[in-house]
Picture (cartoon, rainbow, N blue to C red):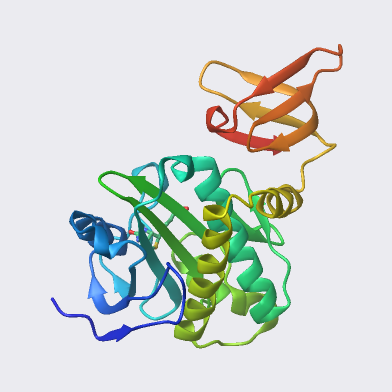
Length: 254
Ligand code: BTN
């Protein structure tokens, strides 16, 4: 199948080559097939419509044709950048920054990889690692509240729902790709502090009493630190728990 459009953006790594398809099963699936060729590092696959969009935990990702950014980036990162927490933070922060720049709206990150505006999920991120790393992003742009109600998604939202503006999805996709490219370059240059600071801020949980769900048990306490190196919780009894971010499945204020 041939793409409807191909773009060559003036970026450094992500989006120098972008393939925009009319209708494919899943942009993540398509991007993964490109991993056989190292020259495809940074290729972005976009779709107007997906017939089998993949969500977290094996769920489907549904989105009416043309209503949202459906993007998958193929990366062949150096070993130091293959940490899911780094890639997730980079993708989520890039989405938040794109939203702020294109709408003025402030978004926050719900651990580990959802982006919310006023409590409604506007973006989901799915990172799949195989031969390469595929970062899939679904950003809801123009859906109405009625569309989400009809799809039985009462906690979902789109950019349009918060300011009534309908936007050019391709323009938002380009802005997002440029933002991602900028952040990726900084990761490659080892400049992770800015990302960590933005991630902490957008998570908005520091200093709050939280519950962290890990595979073996749940930990509750005051969140004293959130960093790529670890989370630090202090229980009411003064006990300190240090948790690697990759071990934390859910993190919520209580
Ligand atoms: C989630 O469940 O929150 C993650 C959803 C990720 C959806 C995006 S849409 C573009 C890309 N292609 C897919 O098949 N999934 C991701």
